[in-house]
Structures are given as structure tokens and as C-alpha cells.
Image (tube, rainbow, N blue to C red; front, side):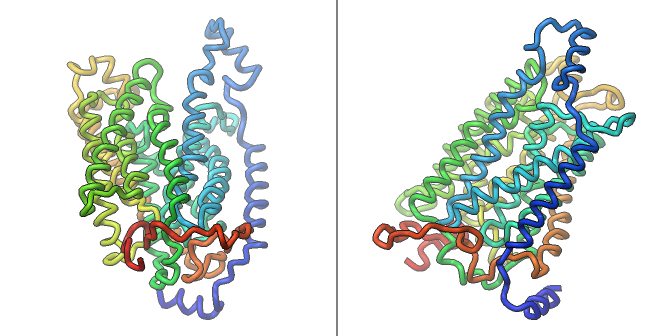
Length: 480
């Protein structure tokens, strides 16, 4: 298969990065398609439509507009929205000459992805069989942002090596696959995954890794001078880390139950995040002879606790249990950056620019299994009889499900997410290998000038790199 694509590449000659036709065509055509599909299918829900809201107030004896669910969910939506557009965007600005693309392409694919997500999730979860329409409200907006997160995570593994057209294709298929696996995991298997350890992080991580593996570039070392950071680019990336770290409790609790569910999820995430910071710092310092900290570890491994707490956040995992999860994941994630990422590139030929394997894929997988264990050991002494029904939604077709059985389904859901990510990513990677998408050549990666108008720099103000990495800290001092 590789020889076939190599022959096609030779036939087409050197890669053509001119996307003047393809990128506008994709943006215009897909946005017009969104307008048409929204016109056919999408309507306001009963809390957003003036007529339906007034009828609901009268029928449910609601006396105040403040009881509209919008006022309960919108603060969480704002926090999640900031994470998607600011947190993820700035986290990807660590590359010395790729900050425009890190923030700009994140902006582009999230803006497209949330529209496609509203449709895909609506068709699977809230399509009215009578009117064939989708009702959207504030919770739909939160879930659409969650759906986009999977594709943004995948973008991290591909950063600097693909064109914006390819990223749009990654998002189109990523959102579609996400909606399908989410339906299987949450509806058919009836798993609980409030913060998305399974459906968002494990899926998005393995989806991006599979694509990157298929798109392996054996001559990527030709761009190694740009595959690293400088002082100010790492500082911008740290802004993204801090936004993500601060708002992650909102991310994991945004769609949990009113009452006890949301505060418990926020508390558990808050504690896990705090714990992962200390262990990430400890392992980072221990890994260097003089105990110096590595900014890559601080930017990424400090967030691993929030990823791993996504599934169990709304469960009664206890505060000290949350600290244990963060403690372990801070260590595992940092060790991943130190040892696993170099191993994956050298042995499996997997080039992971941002290290999503260590921040999303593995912590997401572990978070799914942690949730399975906590669910399996749930009992009435801790939750109460009604509490078990409420937390695990043991009603209707699932009224007779036991906590032990629920734990088994939670583990199965994690496996489904990983399988969708790997298989779906492999197929999408094959599509992206065709030399027609305007991706850069091996010696032209990680450079904004390929796709952006970049202002000229004053030669006297150019600061030589303070830290020069190869593939996000691999062979750190190789050329210094």
C-alpha cells in the first residue's frame, strides 16, 4: 500500500501546498450544506422557542423564567467553549513557527465541527419521529463542543504535518464517528461518561494516533529545525494549559444531573487535577540530572488527572480516590513523554507532535476502566437505593441492571471507543494519503508560511531558540 501512494506521489511530483481553490471550495460548499440541513432539520427546543416555552410554563406550573434550564447550563457551556477555542488552541502554539496554524486551524475546524455535531448528535439522540426535526438548546451546544473536542485532540497528533483541507476531512469523519460511538456507548450499552474519558479522550486520542501512523513521514527529520519551541511559544502554550486546567471541572460536570451530580463531578475533577500537577512536577524534576523542570511535562501531564476523571467524576469515588487518580495519571503521563513517545516513533513509526498518546489516549483509557471499577463496586450503603438509580440511570429497560453488570458495560464501552478510534483513524488516514490535499512536503512542515501570510521579522529582533526540541522534546539537545 505504501508503494502505491509513493508511486502516486512521484506521479504528481512535489507536493503542491496551494489551497486557493480547495480550501475555499470546502468551506463554502460545506457551510452551504449546513445552512440547507439546518433549514430542513433543526428547530429551537421548548426552552428556546417562545411559543413552546410559554406553553411549558403553563402546563408545568412554572412561575419564573429563571427555571429555564438555560440559566443552569449556560455558565458551564461558557467554560467548555473557552476550553475548546482558547484552551485547545493555545496549547498547540508551542511550535516556534506554527502558532498561527495552531490557533487558527483549531478555530476553523471547531467552528465547522460544532455545526456538523449538532446535526449528527441530533439525528442519533433527539430526532422527532413525527416531525423529523431536531430540537436544540443549551445542552445541545455543550454536547456539540464535546463532539468537536475529539477531532481537536486528533489534530494534536497531526499538528504541522497536514493541510487545513485535511483537517476539515479529519473533522468531518471524526464528528461522524464520534456520534456513532457515542450512541453505541451511551444509549445501547447505557454507559455513564459525563466528562468523556471514553467517548472523547480515548476515541479522539486513538483516532489521531491511527491517522498519524498511516501518514508516517520517514523523512520528517528534514523539518526538525522547526519541530520545537522557543521561550515565548512555550509561554503561549502554557496559557492554553492554564485555561484548560481551570475550566476542566466545568467540562466534566457540564451535563451531569441537577442537585448533587454537578458539584460532585466538579469536586472530583478539581482534586484530581491538583494531584496530577504535583506528581508531574516531581517526575519531570527527577528525570533531569540537575532537577530542572521540562515545560512540555508541565503543559500536558498536569492535565492528565482531568482526563482520567471524566468517567468517574459523577460517581462516589470519594475525594481521596480522586487524589489517587490524579496522582497516578500525573506519573503515567510524564513517563509517557519521557519514554513512550520516543519508543512509538522509533519502533512503531508513529509521529505524535503534541504527545496526545500521553495526555488523552492512555489517561482516557485508564479513566474508562477506573469508571468501570468504581461502578462495579457501587452499593446501596454508599449511594442509597434511589441514589443508585439516579447516578446510573437504572430505569426503563435498564431497571434490573446491577452495579457489577454496569461495571462490565463500562469496560466494554471503553473498548468500543478505542476500536472506533483505531479503525476509523486507519481508514481516514488512507483517504488523507492521496496526494491531492495540499499537505506540505517533509522539508516544509511545522511552518506557518506554507498556509499563512506571515509578517516579516526584524532580523535584529530574532532571538535564537532557547529550547530546541525534535518532535516535542525527543533528542532535546541533539543539535545544541
